[in-house]
Image 1 (spheres, rainbow, N blue to C red):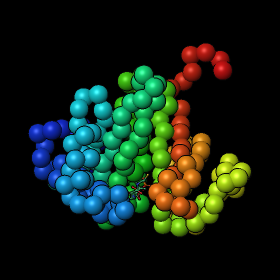
Image 2: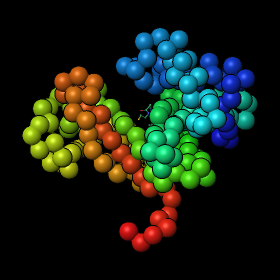
Image 3: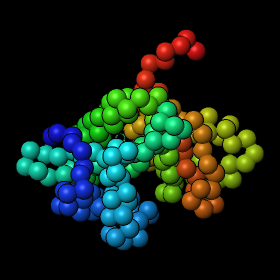
Image 4: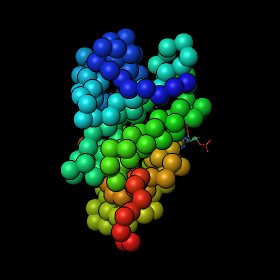
Length: 185
Ligand SMILES: CC(C)(COP(=O)(O)OP(=O)(O)OC[C@H]1O[C@@H](n2cnc3c(N)ncnc32)[C@H](O)[C@@H]1OP(=O)(O)O)[C@@H](O)C(=O)NCCC(=O)NCCS
């Protein structure tokens, strides 16, 4: 498996990635056209868009992101691995590659939002107010919510947006520093 740039001329891989999105995120995109737009938006040079490709050319995963805060911060969005290829380290490899790309472009921090729309954490189906952060501190993973995956890779929960996807369906924010600090903080 190798990880390479997804480019605008690689129409076959763009179609495959859109299919992976539709399969991997059942709530996020209504149809393949919407998923294709998401993939195409990731292609300009000021963004990062990388695919994991098997030896025979099969695309098995995709990661993308864009910068914010004058390049200090990069949002990781989205990440998906073909369901039949999960649990083999491809997600971990894509994130490590993304971190290296961000580092080489001078970014300090990667952040991401990971929704809970499927009752997969203790934050689901609850009124998180008051004491939102208290509930975040005591959050538990009920059903292999992907925040467990990112935690393994060194990402920390840095906040939550209650009701982001409707009442009781929060977005969980995570971040990681990928560049050594020049000053002692
Ligand atoms: C989340 C996802 C990208 C993980 O990809 P993957 O290739 O299966 O992950 P890896 O095999 O690299 O796993 C790396 C480690 O994380 C663990 N892990 C993977 N998914 C996990 C989850 N949902 N919860 C907890 N741990 C998880 C693995 O067990 C492995 O641990 P180990 O190194 O101790 O064995 C993949 O499941 C996916 O595409 N899901 C659908 C889309 C999605 O949820 N994307 C992220 C939304 S923000």
